[in-house]
Length: 562
Image 1 (tube, rainbow, N blue to C red):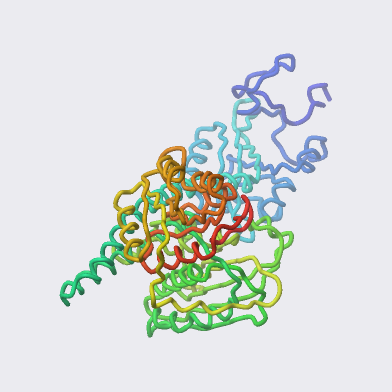
Image 2 (image 1 turned 60 degrees about the vertical axis):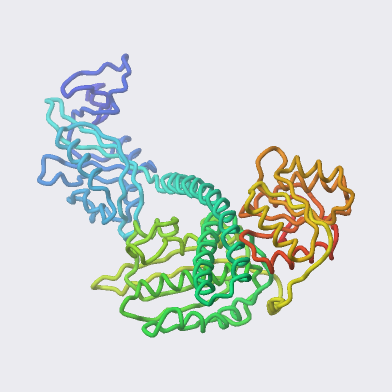
């Protein structure tokens, strides 16, 4: 055997078939093609075959000289990657790895490269023997004999699923953050407009006696209420809604909500409860949780136009090593699940189901905010929303399960009944400094407060408010918007006001932006009233702030529920 023969059956590095390649002139051409002297695969005792069998890099050879270019060799790493045995692989074209979500364009590119006998590197979604998908980073290159005839195609594989999933999650997070910032900003401005609309409608209804006019004003007020609900959904999606969490018994909440659910879902849909007893408490905002549950139930109803059963279930969940995969810290959680018997969702629809304004219901049948709102609320509550769906087919029934995971509290869950709203407006004669950059909102707040007996001073921004604080002798309460133009927003104003008048209570108002409160300085009496607010709400919060007086508020990072 010559020295060349002892070098092995394959030599890489041929730029074109039939050319010789000197070992003294290394080249990158081996990335594109190879030439071999011994094309047979019978002698597998060489060190090269041993290395290929031992490497963790999946590799195969296909034989284009046979019909349909079947697999002629697959190393052990390829068998581990795909789950197929050597006997199941040999003689089959690689297309059996493809599946329903495999890109037809990528398949066409691979076929064209093979037809043109050139190398190609790409990534394709393939499927393992058990049906699970994986992203395959694949390189394919031709192998020629010394006469320039193609004898094999070599293909190396790499499971790049983790990288692809991470990149997709990062892009999705960026998109959702951008949409969240946009929707939160829009909701803030819209809430200022709604404050003016709802406030003036409320004032007008108090001064109009005509039954027809009262009916018209009531219709307008109802539309404004729906607008306020829409902005609340936007803020929940953007995770900037102002939450007021308290300990809840999830089973008790579901039982109390069951009657509402049955009336909402209609006669064709029955509600089944499967509640695990002795659940730990969860600390959540009850109103937002009920809204999230209602939105999920409405989606379940719409997925079953012919009727069916919706199952609401609860269960404890413990996450340990699997917490990281679900983007949650290890610990105890409580799951609230809604399962329907509908058509299920195709993978592409399920991936976009929590995007705002994405809907498959058709025009006029939904805003596309239901699952987006639920998803935002669950995330803001330090939980996770998961979607499991199975499209209906001739072989199997379809259905979708929405799971909301919430951190579990400690001990038994106790829940106080919400206090009944006060029928009498709480009044006073103190002096309130109102700081608001919107002329219309400022005028409305002044009219509200003066009708309740308060003296009112007004400022257009934080700088003007500080001037008034410096010269006016009597100011009993600072009532300021948080988001204002200039360097002195409501939080900065509250901090500086506390230095000037340590005993001055502060009530803030905002259309959104819980983050400002969480990141702001420790300020006295930092209570927050969301917009749009009614006269009764303002009266109650103003009176409560005055009666309570100044107090130290949580430092940044401490829990704050307003």
